Image (tube, rainbow, N blue to C red; front, side, top):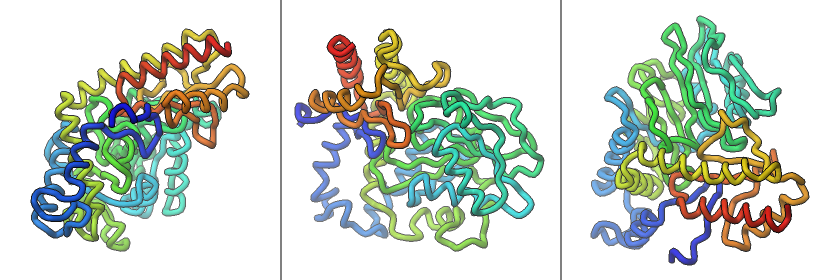
Length: 364
């Protein structure tokens, strides 16, 4: 099986750990002596409820979050949270405050405008998203309902190293879809974190929302029940039928993270992986050109352009022939991108760096 697998650099759905896939494969038809698969089992059964509750606890444990947080499993991906955050938290007379650092951060802001008042504290759109907004000294208005940021910009390839510390006890909210679990940071400064699973958590189909109890108490009780954070908290995320198999896979991925030594160990591995690819870019003499300023580069999504755009489709075509997948840049920006999420191996990143060096020798 391993010999047939590609070097998967897709941005999401993304690579899953091979041992997780093999473990899930063993239980695919029949799980735990139930005589049926996890995809068929009732979400009200004791067997699934055990997996469901364990997965919530595991996520908090792996992230190192203290007591006082709840895990909600919701649908719609991060895109749904762009609307649900302001729907739940943006009350009359308050403003949602947004840091614009990339395409998805801007989408979150634009969605908030459809719900209520939203303002931009800082933006680097005029710089083509090549740099990140500064996080200190932000103009946070006294009527701020929250401050929202996208911690890693999947399309552009940038990642925040520092985070705002809003005054007035304003909650900080993070879209961490593409970098949750990739590095060891103090997440307790965030009042709410959300992430689509399809990067580092598991397969597509479930979104994890991690919300602090005091913010949950302030969340709206008047919007439709299916959109309320309180509904999912009160029902243990069993208000409607959850994507049971996706949550089961998240459970397996979290246990895999623990076996790797936790998030801190993955961060060291991820830094090595990204450095190998960035080195191939930086020593190329301009044949490969990094898109993001060096101090803003992401260790999850590595982006670059060729010395000539005409070489880009050739690079993609040949990379696929050599067993790589997912290296074309996002359709909105072009160029090239390697998404080196947790499950992407160091071997795959070494192979990509070697391929880049060889490609330059042949066409540079």
